[in-house]
Length: 280
DNA sequence: CTCCTGTCCTGCCGGC
DNA sequence: TGCCGGCAGGACAGGA
Image 1 (cartoon, rainbow, N blue to C red):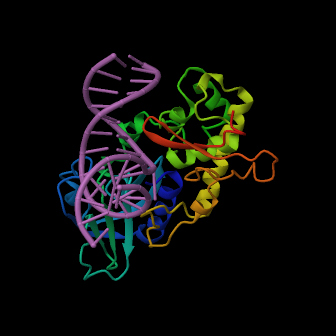
Image 2 (cartoon, rainbow, N blue to C red):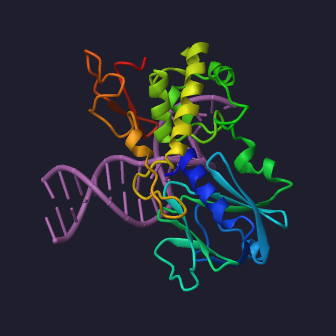
């Protein structure tokens, strides 16, 4: 479900409410999601204060005052709800992890498909954690640029859709924003990576940053079940240029003489949407 | 090494 | 109305 903008939005909501809070109780309602819940989750968190919440790629990192770091991933269907005055909250279907906070609020991790993950590490070793050691640069950070992207593309002959989905190339894009970014850069999703020019790579890096920034500003995209931590809906889905718009005219062709029909194809088992008239 | 396919799991939607 | 197939925002193992 959630890609970088959605995770960023959830993380910001969590930071607002949870930073400086003490976790009083940790309740796991099953043994595992995609991976088992850490056996020492309860003992490492209960009675400790949350010092910082941050996002890395599609992961949420929750730092504790004892050096513990909770690593959370929402998978496809994961949601996090923050409930004020939740002392008497009755767990709902697919609520798998519930933190009780010092102010009486609760954080609920709900995940129907259970592709999500909750892991535990220490701030001293977090950078070498297997989830992060292979990860590419943050697209909105300083280490990502058109030239950095161009260098990586030179060594790859796979199609551009697959390359941008690869978290080792750039961290945080997913199925929606890859289609959107390739559209804005005018690059066909089936183009071989090593056939992308330096200038196109520059345009693509800029398109990636732009679409992500706009999506974050809109609070992410709400498809089926995504919500902010406070239950609000994101609204960037209303600004999609191509994603989910098979058969419609793309924004760039809207004023042109020869109108396009947005096409949907399947690459690596995932749907890709693009404009056949303007993406080459 | 790189690349591609299948798989994990539940829910929802459209077609019959 | 009900049943069934296909598809869904992700990541990783395993095989070629």
